[in-house]
Length: 320
Image (tube, rainbow, N blue to C red; front, side, top):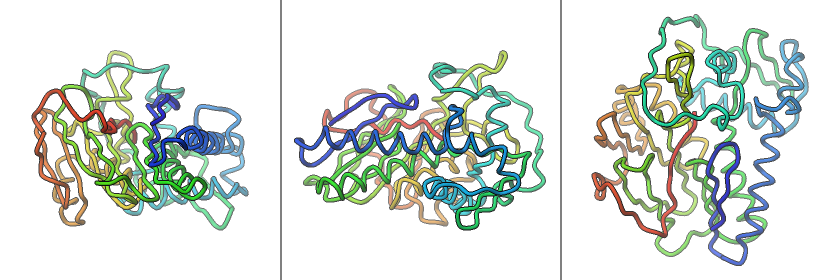
């Protein structure tokens, strides 16, 4: 396994052929670099930043940016707008206008912002993507961070399997994608957000994906308040931290990411919503109690406060 830090995240890649680990790392780094150059909010030379002045009138964008915007809009449709890629200005208003490593605040504190609905119409429905032409109203600013990270994980895992011919697991800050044949018994994943939280080791079958969204990470000070990065599109402010974390297993990391983020936004209502859709999820509330939906395996190791297999990949999540 290879591990490093990028985008303020813990990144890791594991392959079924240990001798190919270094080559796999380079493929992951290349994919992350391409996505970063396409849509980062934190670099003035990203394609999205450079084209921002032209988006109101519509402008041609690269195939990769088409994919990233299209994926974000798909996530919005899946979640009924609970995941909205047009919250860039809201993020900036909250002070999230630079890399999270420059804003990092440890766990603790509860966001306490005025929550007055201020969007009569969902922002994502105002974004138009026609072929390679992207049009975004001037009052909106795209923030593709969460879904772009998931797309990068999916693409990196698929690239490793296709180019190196081995099974791969790629984890970008808890967004996990797999491709190719898995190891005997499947990929063993330790699901735990922060040390001391309930944990559970699960088996992730080859071709499956997993994502964890957390209200305990990516926190920073806004004046005297502590805020987190998962926003409720209805208010443009951090979602109520009903859940410490929500983990979802799905057929793609993009899908898992969309529903784990939406689970945070929907709060307690996520349980019935996930149940009606058959979403396999594990939700940990403020008191550390665990609830599961769909086909998620019932807790076995939950409640244990230490331990965990040394062969496991920690699914510590921190995204939108």
